[in-house]
Amino acid sequence: MTLLMKNYLNFETDIKDLENELNQLKDPYNQEGLSEVDTEKISKLQNEIDDKLKNIYSNLDQWQTTLVARHEDRPRAKFFIDNIFENFIPLSGDRYYGEDKSVLAGFGKFENKSVLIIGQEKGEDLDSRIERNFGMMRPEGYRKTIRLMKLANKFKIPVISFIDTPGAYPGVGAEERGQAEAIAKSIECCMELTVPTISIIIGEGGSGGAIALGSSNKVLMLENAIYSVISPEGCATILWRDPKKTLEASKAMKLSSKDLLNLEIIDEIIPEPVGGAHRDRDLILDNVRASLRNNLAIFANMNKDEILMQRKNKFLSIGRAKGFTSYSGASENLSMKISMLDNIKTNILKNKKYLLILLAIIFLAIVILQL
Image (cartoon, rainbow, N blue to C red; front, side, top):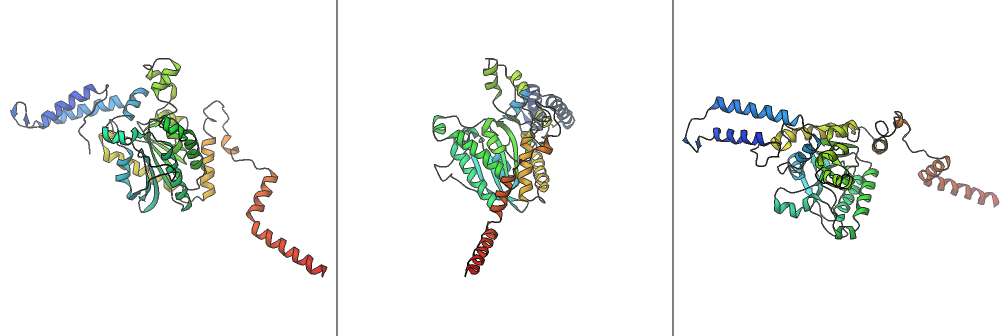
């Protein structure tokens, strides 16, 4: 289903003019009065639009990709939650301070299997964006997701996160309530889960606000999404002291899905319709649904220890093959080295019940012998 566009980016001027002309041709009651619809001209114009879209979107630079990721009409987390999952039950509050409306979280069904769904929600219009704080989570939002992730882990329910945020909220109140600690605890919680976790970056994946929910077994990205430690404007201001050098900053940070897949920071690129995810919402839904199905199937036959180790090794291996070192055998030596003493301690703790019984039997035997 291709939607009628309302908002165009600065490099889509030609497409805007052509689509306006196309809409006038499709309307028999145009400014010139009642007229016959010219289907041949409409078809020719539609083909011209398709060709221009393919040409533009196959040659996007990193800054243009950032603008597409931030597009006003781009589908948000709520759209994916409402259309991919069934019986979604939203849960609120962190049980410490309050509710954070910038993140949707709750349990639902994906193809008749229970999952925990977390989605950073920016909002669809000005009022909802203000209510959702433009997708910038506060500490109570991260603590809510921690609470629900631990609950999902207890009942062996996979976790699916939709990431779309410019970053964590930097307000004074958020800092006073422990923003940095909440993000750190969220990363720690994600890394300790023994259930499959999948994160999908659907728009902006900004800074620690995104990493807090992106420390997953599988990190997926929509084709025109971005994932970076800072915004291009912020990077340009710091490094070049000029916020206009966004293109240079975007290139330097390697924030596009292609760059990140090449660096093995993400695991998969989910293809978007030509012209961006906002141009054909049905197609992007099908693509996300298929990707989720395939990635959840990977972990179907893994036990909890294998799931945990796969996640740890994934993050430990980042930067080893294509970063500052050329060592290619890193993944073989990434498991934690345990000393003999630690091994003995672990075995004692595991078999504590049997050891207590054995000690009791020995004690009774000594007492009987003394009698």
